[in-house]
Length: 402
Ligand SMILES: Cc1cc2nc3c(=O)[nH]c(=O)nc-3n(C[C@H](O)[C@H](O)[C@H](O)COP(=O)(O)OP(=O)(O)OC[C@H]3O[C@@H](n4cnc5c(N)ncnc54)[C@H](O)[C@@H]3O)c2cc1C
Image (cartoon, rainbow, N blue to C red; front, side, top):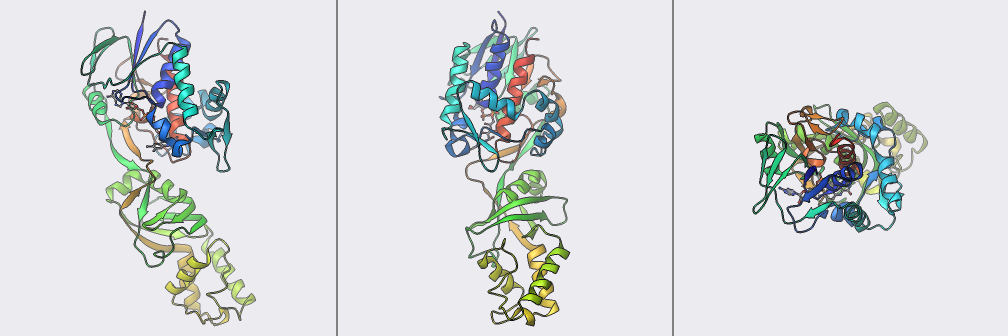
């Protein structure tokens, strides 16, 4: 009987093990999990609700959410992606729902539904799960692998490595000849001390464009002012796509904010039209932009040196120009980062050049498969990181032993 060892009982590990067993019922499959309990991250994910995937059903569009891994995942997504994930869980008794922002959650709003579904499937298929078994050494043998934990050793024909972001396992893989791209944090919020936003925590803007000054790094999306700076999907997207560049800058850099995501000339036209139509109205009381809250508007006016008794008709060209700059290209200094909730994701991991993505198999060693966060793949928030784990696990299951 052939044997597979899976290192790590997380999302990618369980999905690999289940799919390997479904495709090879004769295979013995053992998950070795370091912790006392498996699927811990699934349980805490999505604020305890588990954002299991994202309702984006076109492979090419889906890859755009992955700053690292976008090219490599295109092929795999043609085999197994978001719609397949939804069907997989729903046909196994977990109804899912798509929320307004396209994130997909179990109808139960409880990540336990996902965890218990994976546990039941693994159990039904006779996948062995051994907890408290942290892998410490991996040795290649003539016909397979020897895996060592503190107390035990396991010989196997196939090895699936799914320990998430794990420094010790990256080191073991390096010893086996793999290249590890150094890790840096992804998905973080920006620390900004600026009088314009100091008193505005909680205020959000629905569609801002944020760019890093003198870099080709721009993201569009809702922006939230926090008591330490800025957060929200637009900022998180920028932190994810800029993870490496921003780490090189030691998280000290300037950003440019267009609060409306409109062109300069469009904003200018709106301002001039508004001035013509509302000459006797106070600038501080009447804003032409419904997207910008009253309190943020007041701050932009103060910065543009417009006092609270100025009418629109009295605005000088210079003041209009300054207001235009504040709305369209306001510069803010970022000094440091903060973690987004507890959802830390790292960029970095096994170099994707060394993986054959038709099988999620190592190009350096045959019968060595890798999936999930151990690879240099990561995405913005929204269910994409789990989708990477499900896709890798499914494809390993289809190919291992073939
Ligand atoms: C708080 C939080 C919330 C998140 N929410 C979401 C979300 O809602 N949607 C989403 O898409 N993504 C979310 N993510 C990201 C997502 O959880 C990960 O991308 C995903 O879990 C990666 O799966 P994985 O199987 O590669 O790794 P993991 O889920 O981390 O699993 C790896 C497993 O391997 C075990 N292990 C490690 N080293 C060893 C070893 N030496 N020997 C044996 N076992 C070992 C670990 O204990 C762990 O159980 C969230 C992350 C965090 C931190």
